[in-house]
Length: 290
Image (tube, rainbow, N blue to C red):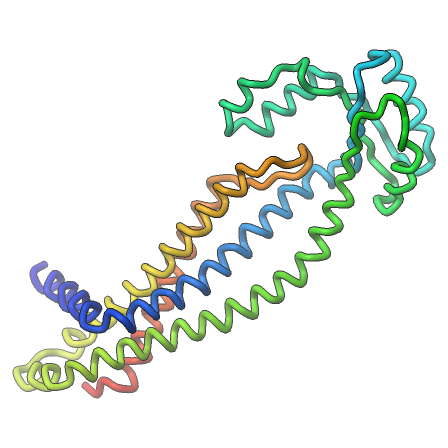
């Protein structure tokens, strides 16, 4: 136990001696892993938002209270007769309130300020072909019962068109920055080895084993990677919390499951530690001839 504590202490002494270079390595890992984590969260946001679209709510027609259920039923019948419409169904105020409670179940303070009377009834529309949503929009413009029309398919089309480009750019940046992080960590270890070359030679002369010399440098590299991964996870969590507070349309959500964030954060931390281990191993392999 005392040997392990000594080796860990030596690793942190190395970090303090090379604080500037170590900080640069931590920031490189932070940038690359923040990009990777952000890409994962973005893909999850697209997946969450497309679920409702895939289930058939291509358009939501929010209705005024004038005319009540009778006028709403007449409009529903008209919409069902549109050739572009596969199916349309009515959601009253009580149903809208239940949906609201489900969507904002993680924000009880907000849910407590809203009642069923505050929410409008709506007609949910499923189209045969989502590209025809503009024809339906055109027919409904100016209708006396129309309060607001939300076109989910339009938002999804924009998200999906961006996803491929952003993912390609993100993957390229992650690979580039990840390689840069590994190289910088390797250089950090090399500088630490060079600064302690005389001490290492003396340790060899008195019989210190290879791993006794190597372990502090490996711990140093892994610590740099874990620090960068921890900063990346914290940055993405903070960004997600800010996105949750943005007022959005009922059809677009800017929050993902906390379990998803936690599991991916653990993966990011593990990857950061692995990047540090690989970088330190490369530095040892080339410059530490023991």
